[in-house]
Length: 131
Image (cartoon, rainbow, N blue to C red; front, side, top):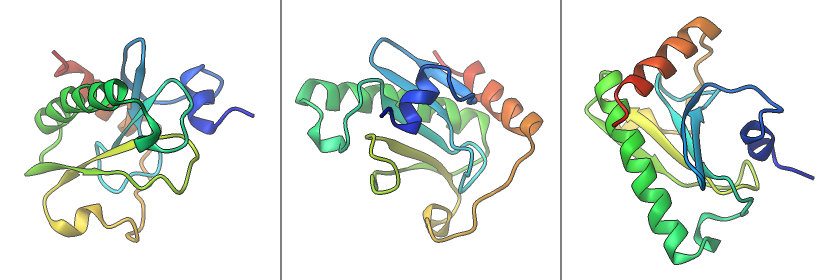
């Protein structure tokens, strides 16, 4: 059975898409820790990030770097935090979270509930800065 991320990538489940290429897909987390929280995933279902081949692992990080730079320009923050937890969905993924303090990347914090129009505005702002 396809993971929720594979279903998002295929378009079966809608998302706020940020970017994609032939191997990777980035979209807004629908339960973000902060405005601009993005998930970066490989299109090929792989349960654990460190099960990716060396080439794909390095390529996903380069892809994520491009997204992180765009988030920094679109969302007021001091840095972009990076987290790999991998327990909640059996599909490798990287969290990119705008940070203004260490507490901003605490996954025990309550998640934001943003209206669709705000999510789309954030996604659009991030996409604008992709180069």
